[in-house]
Image (cartoon, rainbow, N blue to C red; front, side):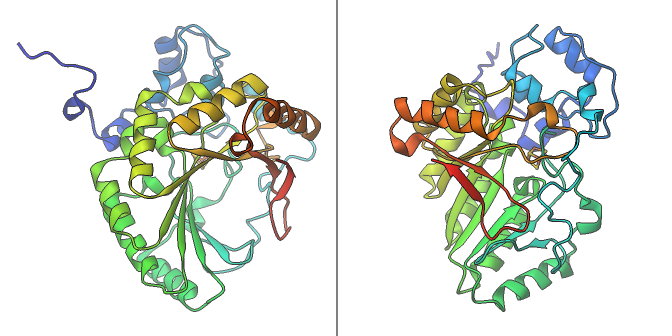
Amino acid sequence: MTIITFSDHSLEPSWQGQLQNAVRDPGQLADILGIEVEDIDTGFPLLVPRSYLARMKSGDPQDPLLRQVLPVGTELLKQPGYSTDPVAEQSIKGPRGLIQKYCGRVLIVTTGSCAVNCRYCFRRHYPYDSQRLSRDDWQALYEHIAGDCSITEVILSGGDPLMLNDRTLSSVTSELAAIPHLTTIRFHTRLPVVIPDRICDALLEWVDACSKQLVFVTHINHPNELDDSLSHALLLLKASGSTVLNQSVLLKGVNDDAAILTGLSRKLFSAGVLPYYLHLLDPVQGAGHFDVDERAGKHLIRQMSAGLPGYLVPKLAREVPDAPAKQVLIG
Ligand code: SF4
């Protein structure tokens, strides 16, 4: 008789298999967690992998992980000051897929796909379809970056850049690594948070082969997200020589509590990750119920500072449309 243990990774589906098997139906999610959910069409559907679902508490409709992914009726309320383009990036002109807001850095919207649909996402209304990158578009991006010596860092964003397969990512990082004035390639990702198996051997191979400094910024918002498998994945990434940082979004009813944020910082550090930014919510239509105001955010940072070494206290920041840099409020 074969005994299957939890740690027998060869018997678990690949990250792509887990993605295919993600829960997309609110009724199914309700059955799995033993809760009631609203029957609502927000235009931004439910998408949650089962490995993330497994970290939620059954029978608790207020679970902080559940609140991040469950569509609710309040998303349909139109609130003043909230827009479909909260950081004004849709009017930025440049090559397809490229956003340059800050000096020396450019961001590439690599894909519109994600492994999870986060209800607070500032790009939940982004016109990804009109920005899809063809092979020629990628070539034009490489040429643009190679032709501008002021660019030292490329940020791969999305969607989630780790949704690209490892063959594509290996090719993209090789092309970028061939540009002499680039020093750093940065990834902003939530995929390993919801499917830790995304940090697989094939990913570690191109990470290891890349000659530039690689920075991974994970998007972890709550300590319950950081279970043993995610910690293990993050430690593997760190051991590859990459810098691993975390940024969180301050979300009402999820992490607007000093003890929770302090616990998150401590757990991140145990997994080899330094907290970087705590973002105030970008005012995106549909997410107003998550808003925590600046005063409360500053108070939380002061409370965290009283119990943590400075390197574990994230900077409280907000994105200001058309500003030359992110606005750091405290930290
Ligand atoms: S993973 Fe990131 S880009 Fe995708 S929905 Fe969540 S916050 Fe938005």
